[in-house]
Image 1: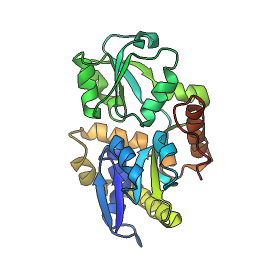
Image 2 (image 1 turned 180 degrees about the horizontal axis):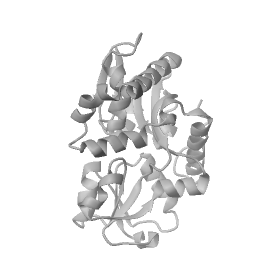
Image 3 (image 1 turned 60 degrees about the vertical axis):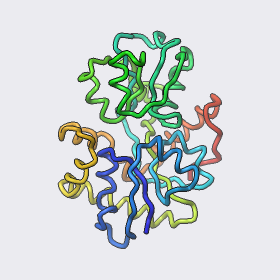
Length: 270
């Protein structure tokens, strides 16, 4: 039995549907834990899972126990986190502000820290992702850092995008945006796991209708349109294989963060 943890977001349920439902030849049965990435980032510290989806920003604390797999994760173009406000229009307006973020070791927050180095906010509050946009709209927070489907839905909350951190990252580096990584315990067969997960990704692309009910059941009341746009954006060629470009993007992100004193340095990814 393979102990697997990933989020209930549409991109993850789409990717892992075939593996979870016994549709990948030769793969073992799977015991799934569904949890937001801020939870998996923390629980993976204790080696709680055989295979786990975490933030790339959490890798410096996890690579002693886990190995990065080159498939199944989230990395791409035009898919970065957003900084949202009700009425602030310039990055420097965040100086001294209260900003809600989805987790201390999320890639979104790491990108925010790199981006905001010259105008640090006054206070950071870690809150569940679903509370961020309503909290900003209600005035509980001056700004919020959001990910995933919020890219499509923030206007419904009456909010304004102050910055697209993915756009900033791509402009600064030319790299795609590293978001979520798939890790496997180092004592497991990484080649076999990579093959099974890649087969699950390929099955999802060949049979998108097969996972529709499974994805919808975990999509937290997202509309079918938002769910489809979410999958189209976050499941891409890098999901099948990180490749040299994906590995370079992750190495640059963690190298810049280590140089800024935000994360411990790492020896390598492979």
